Amino acid sequence: MILFINTSRTDLIQVKLIDQGKVVALLENHEQYKQSELLLKLIDKVRGKAKLTAIGVVSGPGAFSALRFGITTANTLAWSLQIPVIEVSAEQAVDDNKLIELLSITPKEFKPVVPKYGSEPNITKKHDQ
Image 1: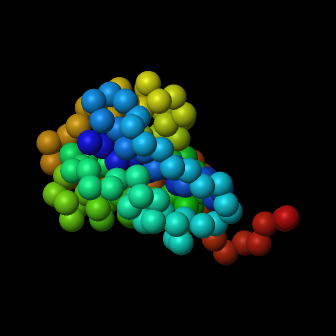
Image 2: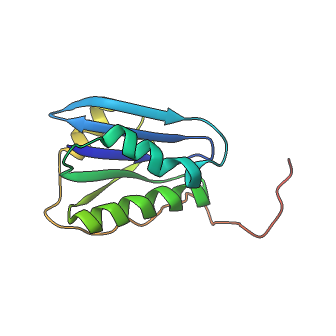
């Protein structure tokens, strides 16, 4: 089974469990800035006792901190379980059929995913509200 994580937006946590070419479980949360509080809880709920063979994660483009949290979680889980992690863009993650096709091409070994923000991260300037 493949665990898929999408935290590309500040108001999105999406976790899917994919088995034999089908999404068999899906949990989403649309609260703003809740990745650090809720991502691991959602993963635990959706995974249950399933044995994972790979982890897919959205690498970008997306929100700086939200992406970093999802990617760090995916890389850490994959490394600790000694399974590969698969990079998917935010655009590719929208269509389940495309997502499943991309996740079916599983690398043989773990190689960490690096975030792709889509623009230079800006964490020091205050943005207009």
